[in-house]
Image 1 (tube, one colour):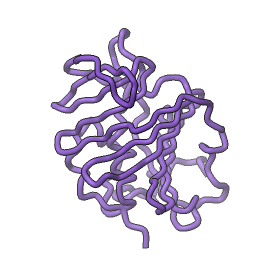
Image 2 (cartoon, one colour):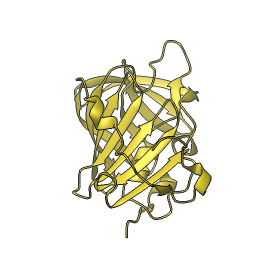
Image 3 (cartoon, rainbow, N blue to C red):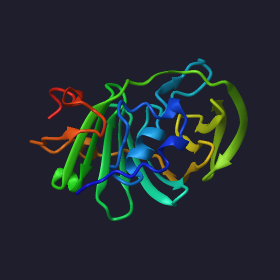
Image 4 (tube, rainbow, N blue to C red):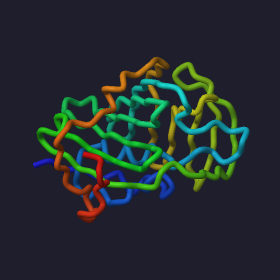
Length: 207
């Protein structure tokens, strides 16, 4: 039985937790990070970067507490994000940031599949614009909202999220073309709704 563990979920601020469903008990670390790490947003001011940017990248990320390791891959042309747990659990989340679709797969869907919807990327209003820092060799600007802090590179990559009682930090960032095949979903999936989601929460026409 596949379960999502949500013990740390409530430590994330509300503007980072808008995933359209409460995670209940599903996919250790992945549901938490996938939803929590993604502010729904292009930063509102024109001088600020657009979150995730327009270029492809691959990033390894550590989520604390728990030292959970994740790999983020982003396809800029389609605004698709793939997040893999690096713990041998074969858990993967696909997010279409433009459409708001979320798909969670276990063993590429052979051991479980879940789907749901959230709002597409929208306006994010930082309350404060902070200092420039260096994380994993990358210069980034701090932005604060709701007492939480993100550090975002000039081309829009969030390399750090501090959510009060925990933190996610990039350990490796590689800007290179990502194969489109990495972001494609297996054919014939019959996913269940994400925990807390209704049957009609599964995006139509996605499978």
